Figure 1 (cartoon, rainbow, N blue to C red):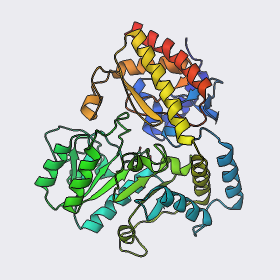
Figure 2: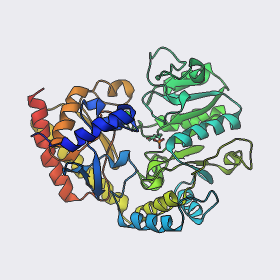
Figure 3: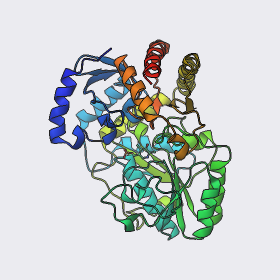
Length: 433
Ligand SMILES: *Cc1c(COP(=O)(O)O)cnc(C)c1O
């Protein structure tokens, strides 16, 4: 079955002339699955509609933020009201306090926080702060973890032998990544080796406590505990990048789920309720180093924007209602169980990694526990699966290495429709393999 995408194709041609790849963020281009992106005209609840009148059940959720689904009444109402009162003041407003209090209440490790306009700024600023606080330069990040597009964090898995990071984008001078050390996710020995080689020189260990940017990869038992201890013993700050997991896994994020207290936490995505927001926070003693009460500079023209704050407050207040996460997780579990049954019936080898309401189907017969094992996935097979599924009206992420997100707007009905579509899509995918 071919989708009718005439309008999307026409719009994409125009967009390509105006913007690199026709998009403002690369993953949207469908390049990884060798397809044409669909142009969205509107969305409601779990559904998203394109410019050709096709509709899809959405599992991208704007790459994580829309945990309530699209255009949730509470959020839309709050946003309208805020916009009517002024879209930006360049001066403090009450919803900054409201959102900050909700975050502090949910995350015991956060006494104080600072809002930003994106997750990228949150991680960048948290790393700067960790360097200022420890008076050290080196940082540890993990292969396959994404922390936004700051120069020195754009270091992926290069040659495993090298410990100095190699920039994975041109335009990043080698000197900018010399202080970025790479370790392997779920491999505490790789972190121990760096700590002994760079004794008393490491400012922070920055990690997605549940990796979700190489597909979903949960931490193994003891891994986060091991990091906590290594950091503690060396005067190094542990930074949890919870831009995806914050308010996704529960009100207290991954740190609550796994019961580990980081020194600093980065947030984004859900806390903006679909608007551009990030935040970083931690103990008062560390956060007090930020300007204007401390020497570490950080600023933002639109940081703490009143409309974005209102969307975040409305979103978190909804999430705080009783039973939300239980419902989200049960719904996701029923989808995953259905997927397992289908994979078994069709004899397709795949791994499903999941935590809470996010998961990834990796087309590989290996257990996926780090970047290297994630890369054993058959990305061509994923592309075929993605396209077949899109034609059947289901929007999964257009890349093997992304998370599928279930929202509170999905119901048993959408899960049923999805499973029927997945069965057909996988059958086609396998038969043309
Ligand atoms: C999305 C993401 C970021 C970057 O956030 P932006 O708002 O896109 O700048 C950082 N860290 C993680 C874990 C993310 O998933």
